[in-house]
Length: 186
Image (cartoon, rainbow, N blue to C red; front, side, top):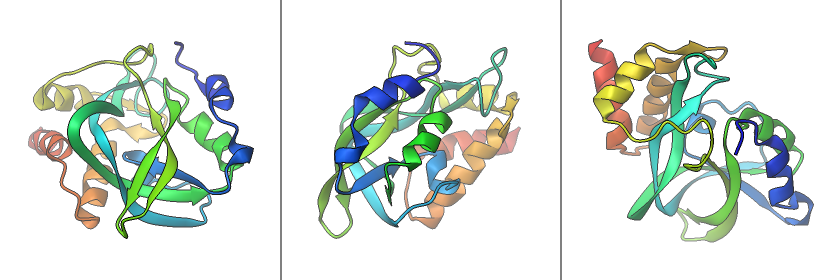
């Protein structure tokens, strides 16, 4: 799979058939909401964990020196907490561009705080995409992140903004907070 997944995503779901579209945010979509939305709610997905295992050649790094950004990794028994935004299907023109570096849209169940379960869409960069960097220790990830920057700014700012946003939502994430801890020591 190539870096640019915009056209693939347009073929994955017919968004005009959805009566209600929710998109799940687990990374930068939590703190950088640069799209219109109808509603938002704290939600979770089951069986997934966020990890800084995806390369960023276009936002937090460059083609020569890709940064690290989040993707979701299937993890039995885990729950990933985040935010769901109800959006119109037109918003995906922007989101597909923003998330084009190896991310595909998947449909999955979203679990809302009020015990509702609704179908939602989430962007995941699978392991077979060209930008996937893979597993590393939090220390090694922090070292990598500390040296990267791209058109969207310093790679470490992604970590700091997300960690602050997760704390504001009372969401614990040891992976994020451990990387933040190492970055603060540098």
